[in-house]
Length: 506
Ligand SMILES: [Zn+2]
Picture: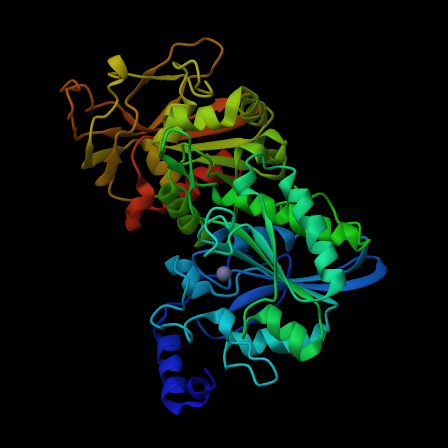
């Protein structure tokens, strides 16, 4: 490590890679950011600073050091908008933007240990160049009383002792260990299964930020770890917690920590800065069971390119806790419509319907379009649209690039463009009017011109049916996309335009 650190070859390699990695956009401009780490490099990332009205401890919180641990970044991003009555919280939620964008542990193009951002903090020595140096400078500037670094492991510690997943790794300090035990007790209370509960570990790994904080400056520190890997089900299948559920576990641990220190934090359910209003649209992306993992990520990535839109992920527990009230629009991605309805549960579905009726917005893509329809026992019935040619559950029309054509209303919403083009289709709903009196009729934004009819579905049914629709529901607005505009660069702005319209900001 030391040899590598001092090697001129490495240093130049590091900067070559820095220059090559595409600059990831930061999502949190405007309200909040106090400054930038790694300014002017591909690692440029905001940090946030909140001081309560009364004196108290200063806590430095980091997330997103490893790019394949998205819940750490998501939790820290939420915590960056928390308030406390006493003390100060300084949060750098997305420490490694290039790795987060690539969804990989290491800095793209670099190997262990150099590519591992959380091995850049040697004890009793200099930290490496780049964003790690900036973080260390921030550490020295704010002189925190505590450091919390938020991560994820690949497996549940109690199932696989080779992983640190679902654990707190505390520095060897009596007070830290006592607090970690309380944090674990709080999160364990939400977990029924013994083998998915948390474990207390000691002594963060050499060259990690947490270890350096403790050994270089005697600042007590912890690494918090949820698990991104799967757990076994009784039927032999496997499942993983959604990013939003894992972020919820992190928030609960950090909230317990701040509470134990007497800082009186706001609710752990705060996901987004309530001061983000006006022209900016706050979008909740549903990522729980039934939502495809890639679909939620794609939509999140597409919307992150637009300054007017701020996204957070929500799980079923979040929706059921009433957390949609923090948002302007809820977005349901592809996957399974009935699966998402199932994971929401009856009470979650009622919360969504109430949210839209009271003025909220809805965008459903593919499976999310089935969820918005009015003809299933489990659908939300927020659009007066029923799905056709799905007899015997045969909704698998197949996947294809299909031509669609924008209507005048579509051109009005999405801007002046060639009205006909191809878009990716993957078993999305085929709509017809639902003829439900209590729901206003939908407006068609685009029609299918092409067709796919695999797996025994009827031919000739699809052309001329609506591909993109919108409607009103109570005080709110709903949009449904049968195909996937987010998968085609030239029309991915449809997603942005739809959420802005759904939010009533047109
Ligand atoms: Zn990690």
